[in-house]
Image 1 (spheres, helix red, strand yellow):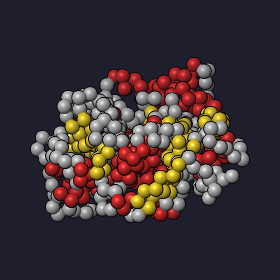
Image 2 (cartoon, helix red, strand yellow; image 1 turned 120 degrees about the horizontal axis):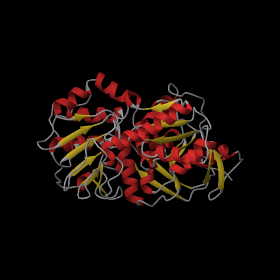
Image 3 (cartoon, rainbow, N blue to C red; image 1 turned 45 degrees about the vertical axis):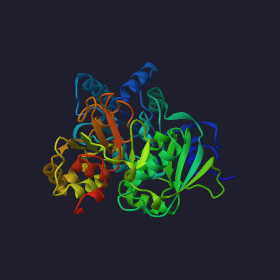
Image 4 (cartoon, helix red, strand yellow; image 1 turned 90 degrees about the vertical axis):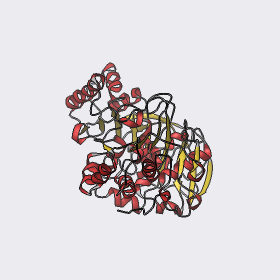
Length: 425
């Protein structure tokens, strides 16, 4: 019997010829990731277990991204714990300050996360790396401690569900819209502990930025991981970045799936997730007139260069609506530098936006964009739970960067086609 791409990666890392859904395995880890919220807990557990040395200083990655630049004394202490640990163990991959970016954008960009890898991270959106053809999943801080110490973890092999994408995405429809549409179809537990495998002719139409955004959000449907088989788009992205050798896998024709979902992406319009769940989705044409107070363009879902270019194309020559705050956060220093060199910052500043150094901050209601009671925000992030970006009485609407930019200009949730004379960079 054939295996899925997820099963093949797990089997290879467990030293087995095959695995099947439900099987408990102990598998070798290629990358163990932590950030300034979760890594300090893992470091404490590592030391409690008597850890004296990480399993491989090249494969433990620590990134200060959630509350940085440090917003208060507590966050400064958190980063200090990471910094001291990285220095003690001479980690190759420790990022803070001018080298730190949002971890789930930084690792693919720097060639640390690669096709065929088994990656664990003490953050639920570690599933992002499945866009490259890796098995990547979030774990708790205690599991991260075990991975840092031994280089291995146990897993229950997930069932796989195949999502077949056909057609061609219409104008203004991105990977963000496709994954929101899927989550709206299946619900927040529709893929519980399953691998969401994306395939079909439409995948070739999706950029790496689209795929990363989609894999990033599979956890919002309860998935263990999301994954795309590597193809020419993957190779073009990875080949000049990879810091080591990698291996691409693909599912066998006779692989078994728990379910199959077919979606014609040509029938999808830009999507908006209403409070307070990513599954509470409506097509843009059904949103109505909803006034907003803030727009946030950034995060590990949509803080990439392609996202900033798209937003800037709409904001060029225009201004943010009165009494609306627009916050733009490039996800990594490389994206920040390139956006600045391309003149995107001039466009954002002329429009009245605030530009922040790379940080997760606003996405989780940490800093750089916290909402007050009763305020509404359009965000290109991945979650809109109660109190996610600030006060429990605030509301967050999830959308793609084009919808976010148009909404900032018009002061209400709106689409790009409502603007006259749309610019393209």
